[in-house]
Length: 167
Figure 1 (cartoon, rainbow, N blue to C red):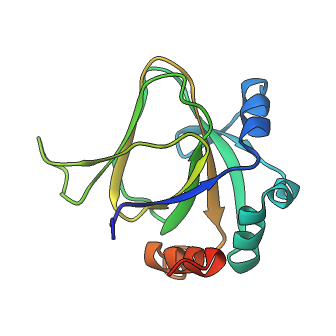
Figure 2 (figure 1 turned 30 degrees about the vertical axis):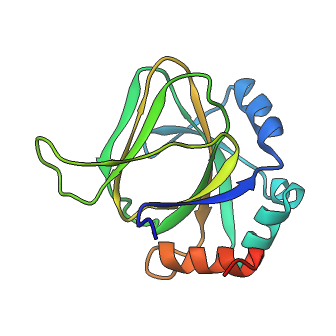
């Protein structure tokens, strides 16, 4: 199993609605050095995967904006053990990378190439970074109510397998 991310192969049923809303949204909130468009809990009801996931592990969700020519440096999340993301657009060039190595001058990494609108289980406890180049980058993200001590990457993959009956 990949220790950084898990590609669910499940496409978001709300992707088009979210990208349209995000491109016209003007009240972005600063959130851990990203810009956040919080989403109302009712949006979850429009997507059967999200609805079932929320029944098992309640969460809040939103859209993150990373402006052109910005990056989010190498880090491990303080509170989140795991999240679920879906890239809403692929209009520009951006990279999300993971590394199991400590920060140093050079080292190896694994790139996460997001398929647009596919839900990805993302291991927030592995060192990761994002670089965004020429266009705005919009990412749907879930923040579980359970912090890293109660919900981790392996546990969420098990939940995914139970939801989808994949063993």
